[in-house]
Image (tube, rainbow, N blue to C red; front, side, top):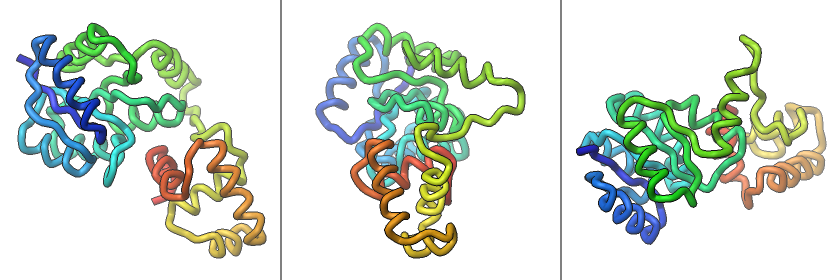
Length: 211
């Protein structure tokens, strides 16, 4: 029987997903409500598949995926999330995810994805697959810039913020006024659909910017 771990910070969603997987003949061996707990539970239970949300406290799903490559390489990660931005999909794949589904997928689709990933097959949900193909169809050596919706200056501001630098430091390094930096930060929040600096920095680090 395929052994599965569920990591998601919403208890009701975890409960529903557990029932769905168990009804499909899969063995749910552990649950976790945050990223750190997910890593610990995988190390303890060694499931075949870790079914992860990307937005979790303490460690994001991308960070969990990256750590599991080191501490539990035998466990394959299947992402199940609401997040579908291009840079998020790419970050998860780069971190080592074997599959990427959007929440709202049906029971049969989730079951097939878990079984396929456990068997060593990469799986991407509708819409996601097209973008994944686009990433790897780029010419050899091509670099996919993260956050294409940001300007080059906004991307640089975000990179420095992800390194832990405040607005005053960023302004000095880029030879800008603090007001201009604040305006860039506000624009970044809007374009990334985040509400605060911590969320923006988490998104940036998942995409490989900053520390």
